[in-house]
Length: 201
Picture 1 (cartoon, rainbow, N blue to C red):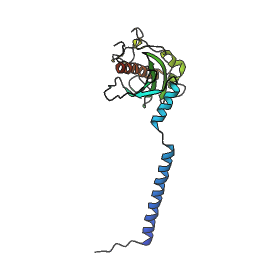
Picture 2 (cartoon, rainbow, N blue to C red):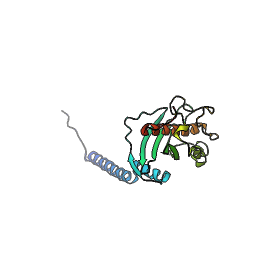
Picture 3 (cartoon, one colour):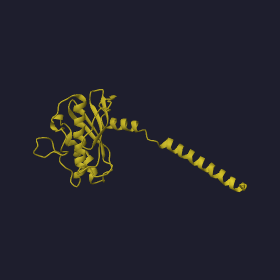
Picture 4 (tube, rainbow, N blue to C red):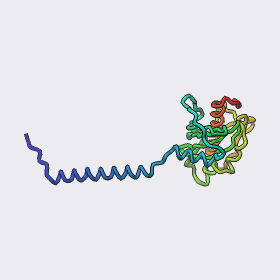
């Protein structure tokens, strides 16, 4: 049997590479520790900026909740004043949303009425799709009630002559306007289902 000949230089190289790898791993761990984002804290901070009227009282368990129409209800919180704060995500779908990552919104509904809403995350183009998240567009939803929406499912965007609310679209941002509308509509559906309230559909 031939004896394996390992030189001291080879051992030294292997040890050095091992030490370098260990140091690199430790440095990455330290960087990660200081740059790690606490998603729960970020969400609560965003909620505080959108709805400062009351504190969060509790979070609703959504394990039995069924999402529809390319939407996903991510979180629902109930504030101490009874408002429901809904974080909802809309996937990119036919004529709904432009960016592949979709959009996420915070929608606040109190006593069956939309009182606040805001974009939470999106990658829409500044000056185009991002305009659908500006206050001058979002304000058209403020004051609408659950009765203003058809939440039965089916068509994602309602016809202007349906009798239900249809949003004024942002020029050059039709898909994103539709995504915002679908997020609000799905939030209303979630509110109605979770509260046992009334809505059309």
